[in-house]
Image 1 (tube, rainbow, N blue to C red):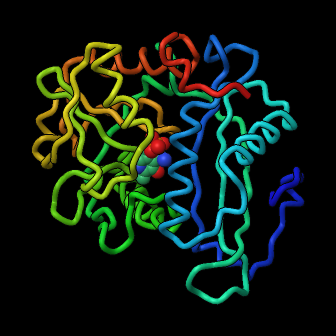
Image 2 (cartoon, rainbow, N blue to C red):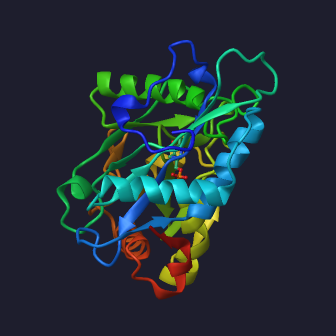
Length: 300
Ligand code: PMP
């Protein structure tokens, strides 16, 4: 926290802090070799995440008091002092210090909470293969010209919370939101990909989505490494209903299969064959088993 290692219970700030103006990042470090194994962790896509953090700070007028290299050292230190033995979630949080006039804030808090987060990945993993019924939310995704979802601001997650609560109230496991034009946007904390004609299709960044690191990675490397073609285009609600498979992708969500959307069942098998190939590929990448993509991993 602000340059020193502190126990969580002592990471305290004033209740007057403008935390609602904060931004954050969600990063994962995976155990080397075997997702359930032991050994040191590797941070997946550090550069992409820290670059997005700096973009979010710039958009929100926040000063970043540390360099990207200093942040990486701080992340490594935090993981090491915790002596984690599993996969780790890293959530750097930046917000302006209290008492500073609005505009460009002169000083920021930088706190890097980390905690162990088990992976949902793994062919027989019950969390991975459990059925997931999604609905199309009655809440629209926040519009780019109101609160840009491309930056990772805490404020964006008020929108996600409304959609999640609606889904739960209606008995669904998760929500897919449409953007303000009526095209498919994303889920509440992950991007959506669907399979059509054995190709993966996903909405563009202009459909009010977060510029997802996982989405970018998969779009680029699935065709090259796994032989799965990908396409970026606007999807309609009908595209969702008519898709052969659907899954979420994201740092926390990893590859999350979806059973049905608005109670329309997708495909004959679950998880579907393409989703399974994406899952297998992503599992191998993050655990360091795809040699030519090991440069996406930063050892702790
Ligand atoms: N959309 C939203 C709203 C998210 O919160 C996340 C998780 N950060 C994602 C998409 C996926 O982004 P990433 O792949 O960078 O984790």
